[in-house]
Structure formats: C-alpha cells, structure tokens
Image 1 (cartoon, helix red, strand yellow):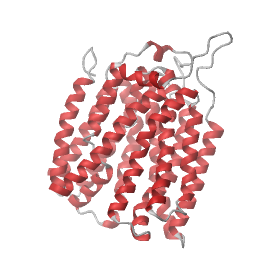
Image 2 (cartoon, helix red, strand yellow):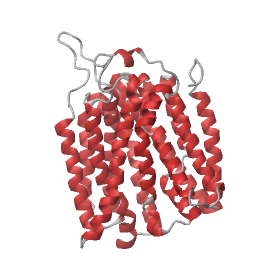
Image 3 (cartoon, rainbow, N blue to C red):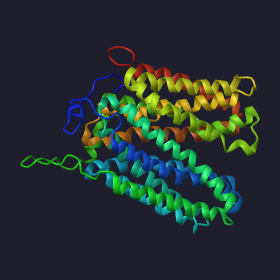
Image 4 (tube, rainbow, N blue to C red):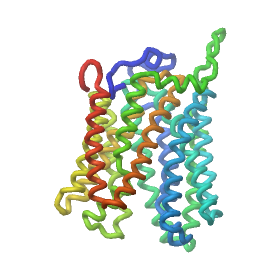
Length: 420
C-alpha cells in the first residue's frame, strides 16, 4: 500500500480488466457512485440533523434513551460491513449488495413516521444502519476496481467530496422544511424517503451491474469466495498493518459530536450557531478531499494519512491550550476537515495494491470495521472520562494517546525502502 510502500501484489496489480496507460483521471462509475452517495447523504443528514431534537422534545426520550439509540445508530453498520463485503465478493456482484443496502436504508425513512417507542425506533435505526453496512464495502470496491492503482487516492477523493456535498445540503434542507411545513418532522422524514428512493434509482439505472470474474469461454470458473478465504486476508502483513493501525488510531479519535461540544464550550459559541459547526468541517473536507487524494497518489498515502492525524492532534492542542480568539473556531474546523480529507479516502485507496480483486470488498470491510469499532469504543471511553474527570482531562488523555498511536503507526507503516 502507499501507506506502507508503492509495491502491489501481482494479482491486484495485473488482473484482467485493470485499466492501464492514459485515460480519464476519474472513471465514470466513480462519478455515478458519487452522485448516488450525494443524494443518499442529503436524505440521511436530513434525518440526522433533526433526530436528536425530535427524540428529546417531541417523543420525550431521556438522555440515556437517546444515548442508547445513538449507540445503535453508529455501531450497527460497523458490524454489518464484514457481512456486506463478504457477500459482495461471494456473489461477485457488488452492485447487487450495494443496491440492497441503499434500498433498505430508503425503506426505513418512512418507517420513522410510525415508530413512537424506543424499541420501534431502535429497530428502524438498526435496519437503516444495516443498509449502510451492507453498501459501504461493495460501493468502495466498485470505486477501487474501476480505477488504476496509481489514481486510487484521486478517485476516492472525488467520491468523498461528492458525498460531503450531500452531507452539507441535508441539514440545510431539513432547516428550510422545518420552517415551511406545519408538521415539520413528518415532512422531513417524508422528503428524506423520496430523496433516498431517487438515490436507489440512479444506482440501478446508471451503475454497471456486470459480475466480476466472468470466465472466458472454455475457462474454468472461479469457485465462490468462502468465509475462510476472506478471513485469510489477515495473513497478509500489509493488510494486518492497515487494519491494526486504523484500529489503533481510531481508539484515540474523538467523535465529531464531542469535538463540536468542546469547541462550543471553549469558544463560547451560541446555541443558535451550534448546528453550523459541522458545516465548517464539511466545507473544508469538500475543498481538500480531491487535492489531498491526488497528493497521496504522488508522494505516498502513508505520508498524507499520518499528516491528517497530525492535523487532528493540532486541533486537540488548540482546544486545550489556545487563547479564546475569534480565530479559534475556524482554525479547529479547518484542521478537523483537513483530517478527514487526508484520511477518509486515502485509507481505502491504500488497499488497491494489497488485496486481490476478487476479495477487494472483503478487504475493505475488514479495515473499515476495525476503524469504526475502535472509534465507537473511543466515544464510549471519552464520554465516561468526561463524566468522571471533566472534558479537559478527557481530551488531554486522547491527545496523548493519539500522539503515541501516530508514532507507532509511523513505524508500522514504514515501507521497507524508507519512509514515504
């Protein structure tokens, strides 16, 4: 990988169907998948923007009940990623699994109108996150398999930039719907469902659905991928390094919600402006995702990936020790968005030269799940530390942990020929 070196496994680098030489910088399928993600994120973020207020003020949920649902919302998809990745490789049709995932999430949006208890809402949210888990690895596999190894960073950067555009538009759409509609929450959920269906339609109509590894006439067909074969990917030293470092760094990556709460307290941001803080991160992410992805292709993905975590560590330091100035909020948000731009697409891009094509979705799922579960554990630990010792102590502990973990990752991911 470019996080470790620029070499590639023979099968991943020279398999049939891999484009070589001059060609478009971004494959058409990447742009179509980016459009699907943009539309779907508009739908998802419309719900995410209003869900806390809806649960607490309208349905009267306690903070404990909301915390339990938030855990379901963020934890289920990480566990399902492994299943989605393996099934996509097994049936050799990534579009099918991605379509099932997008379709399941779209189905759940109108069900929010009918769910009035914590049990019903928990079930609906779990199904929604199951859809996200099913689609993530197959979608990223389609991006990876349609792009030459040397352009993976740019391709994932383009996709993540389009995805982030949807994440920016969703809360704004929810804001205007709440202002215009009499039954605001019902209108948000209804419009969200319609937008989600549109995303599924774009996927079905415009994303190629050709199965992979279709043998030529007279050639022997590859047997279906078995669970043991997918798990055997962990024997690859470079994939173990990727998954281990993603988990290690994830254990010290404070969740976005906590970062915004800390920034609000530290800078005295008014409650009426709090909902705009995520937009600041998203704008920087949008602007830098493609340039940093292309930079990672040129200078090495390890370098950009670790630099992103250095930026996050700097944001923690500003939250801990910087004076209260008008520049604090934009500086922290800029570093926060830069962190995501330097890591979110670069990490899956690094797998192109590590995992064989017929196991690409499984490899992406292994690394993605390790990172997501680690970040979920970090959120639980950070919340507990905040409760017992205060926000400053909790953040200082995370900063020290991130510094140590980044140093370890820098050594583990060092290529044999020297640092990149």
